[in-house]
Length: 227
Ligand code: CTP
Ligand code: MG
Image (cartoon, rainbow, N blue to C red; front, side, top):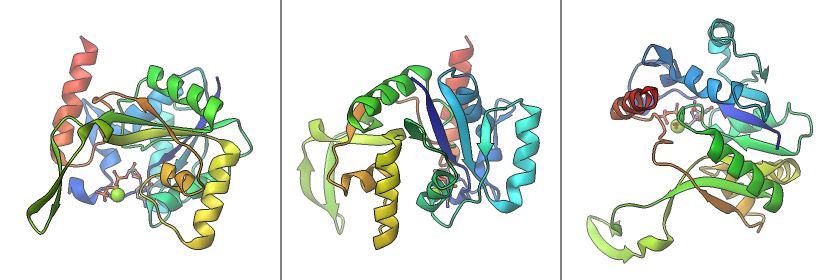
């Protein structure tokens, strides 16, 4: 089933501490941004890519798209101050499609199988997001003291992609914007409407490149996949 994808790429990468947008850092000679874009470029079900970018980075990103033959990008609108604003700025330019995926440009290891499961689930139910089960014992802590040991079976660590029927995510974003609600992911906006959001079990390899040590995991994953 076909879909279009929104990739927010307009962050600063502060936690990476590289002094530049972390998406331009290379994993085995190729920018993180390109690794992510290639997944969607190569997925036959992806019919369009929307990339939210910083205005001052647009020219360089266009050069990268040309160099690496990424041809599915339909628009590169300005990102906003928060990730949610960057996503919204892409949604505003999109034409009606059946399914929209939102995916962090900083998660280059997402696979076609997981994408297909998310798209199918969103087609059937409206909203589906990727996540993995918490591995460690989980505790709630306040002021350095354990308050509670939380039942791990009910805890999931949430990733992207997050997949939605077009009308549902548009409505969720409109409502959030109207009341000034800022979520940490798109699913939160849909949850606020009272709409069920389904989870699709993803992979621990779908890690977000956030801090320097993620780059080590990232290169290890690429080396393993190249074997
Ligand atoms: N992002 C965006 N617009 C923003 C903030 C983030 O498009 N205003 C994008 C980032 O480029 C990234 C994704 O959202 O692809 C996930 O965000 P995160 O990992 O937090 O990236 P940064 O915000 O760049 O990093 P940091 O929070 O460490 O500054
Ligand atoms: Mg951020």
